[in-house]
Image 1: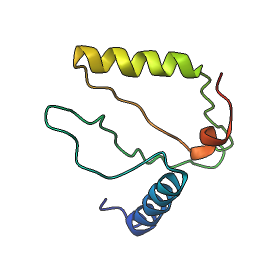
Image 2 (image 1 turned 180 degrees about the horizontal axis):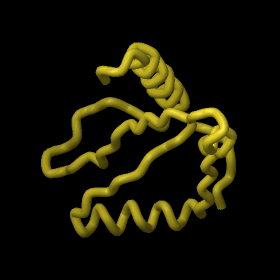
Image 3 (image 1 turned 60 degrees about the horizontal axis):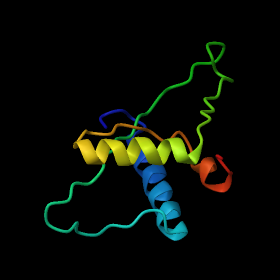
Image 4 (image 1 turned 90 degrees about the vertical axis):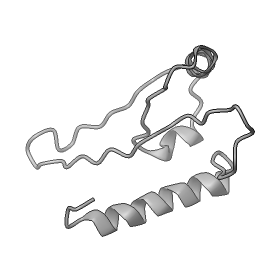
Length: 95
């Protein structure tokens, strides 16, 4: 977060979290004893004109597949790593 654009990144993160909270898919609360939260991290990518500038990443997965991976990893105590490029998936049917 030492890049000159860091303030803009912070604003975008806040906007994203506010949107997720308003939709009811993200809440900040204490977990019950013995429970572990699923971690996440933000990934910032700079697009350079003429080098994949117009490329977009559009993963496709069925909701049941995502649930299976999340539940199975929780049962085995694995760390689950994932990312969300945009919140557009919240408005679509992944089934």
